[in-house]
Length: 389
Image 1: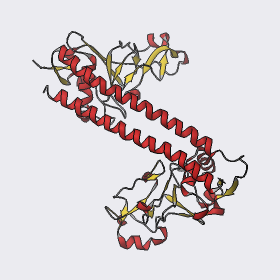
Image 2: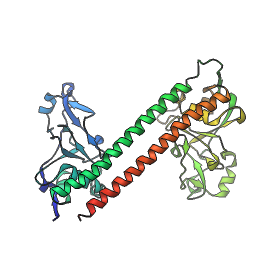
Image 3: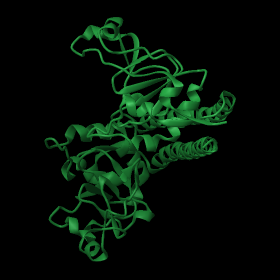
Image 4: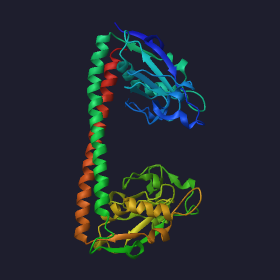
């Protein structure tokens, strides 16, 4: 038989944390873990980003949360999200601790139920800060079958979460490997036979259309896409159909039309973000916040090699250091043109691209596997819990 019970009914204690005064340095960096709402993201917490001292604990409203409890973010970007704590810990006032009555429910079963109801819980948050309070959390209702059935559900979902954790770890390690080999292979400044040239010697640059050419009324949905900084991700273009213009306007902006092997840079905001134009993006338009780099003699260099150079930390540091402006830093054609780039032989460029492309493909495959496992986990969590309703 399945009963519907509130969080308050199945818990031995539900309470919020507290924060020691930041005016006292001696209250921090001690031995007591102290978690904050930003650390809660449907995860298992085994350590805190920051600790407090016994003195800080005793002089604040912080309370200890026992191992094998659930925490929920009550405010901030993670409001409504939950996590399992596998350590004795404390928390700040934006965190709700839920200590489960073990004779009624298993803490991981309750965690899976709350994760399943995340969007519903988040939607109930109130106020300018979109916050939850203890009373609201205590009133959340979940189905409570027998402890035996709860354990069966936990065992199944734990298998999926273990698989997800393993896939996530593999992805993190592969990204680290990619960054290591990218930095190693592209550190060419002192290599014999490698020319160092100014970008202006091998490419032309052009900024996107100024505001006087393009107004709000010119944007339509589903027209010719504009490539702005927000549409550049990991060296690829991710266009948004709402950022596009009609054919007539596209013809007026013909000088800003992109070609295969062009590279577009963010010229303001996130300095150094860039993407390469493939055949799929030919005839897209350079957006107002972007800058086009077009190579003069394409047959003498590998554009994908140049993209890897531009994405390297060496180039990003140069652009960040050279950026101009006040609160909104930006780069221009002159700054980009003075960037020094290494040019090994064409065969060496291709060798480096082949190695880095292999890592990239591996990362893409791991991301796809992780996404598939995440969907499987969510499907079975929904299926198992909804069967009880």
